[in-house]
Image 1 (cartoon, rainbow, N blue to C red):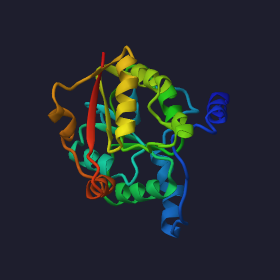
Image 2: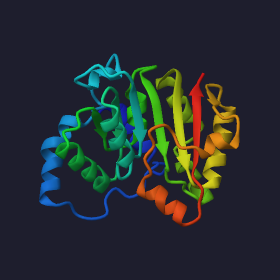
Image 3: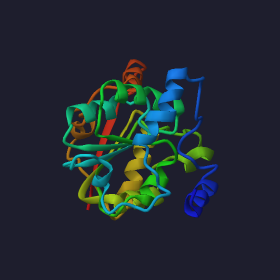
Image 4: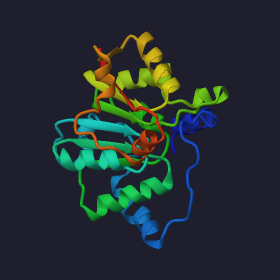
Length: 236
């Protein structure tokens, strides 16, 4: 492991945007996927940085999209299968979620996804400048207690990272059902010089993104009376 990665992990030990890493044991088949299949898809930020994010894929993708914290994988898997011309990078540190995604990718022979299972900051700091067309941060952990707000992934440092890797006019998607985190994100992006909120009416932030698929988490939020909000920011 490089010194830079070690330093990032040490400094973020109490600030990581994710909580637990594993909830239950994996089946022997899932363990085998991690040992044999996962390394073929896993990005390695300790290696020299590529000249282009397109180099991760066997085809020349029209766009490269990064999804941070993909959870059950419903969104990124749907996007990858319906947009085979693009390339997708998924970051998810929760082992059981990654195992589920791996099974679907292998069973369906999905070839345009690459994965990472640690802190997304490590990937953001490793990717070349202006190499990503879109960043998706969908229903991230809101860390509702004030003492945990430093764990929220949206902050000025990470917005700086987004601005560095996004292409000009690239897009940052943020979806949530938690009002305080929605307002938090709007406030942080409003004062950041590189992001412009793309909304002219309330309908804009109540309308799901193109080719959207409702995840189980979103369905649960709606059942419990919370209203999803879909924010879209353009990289200036």
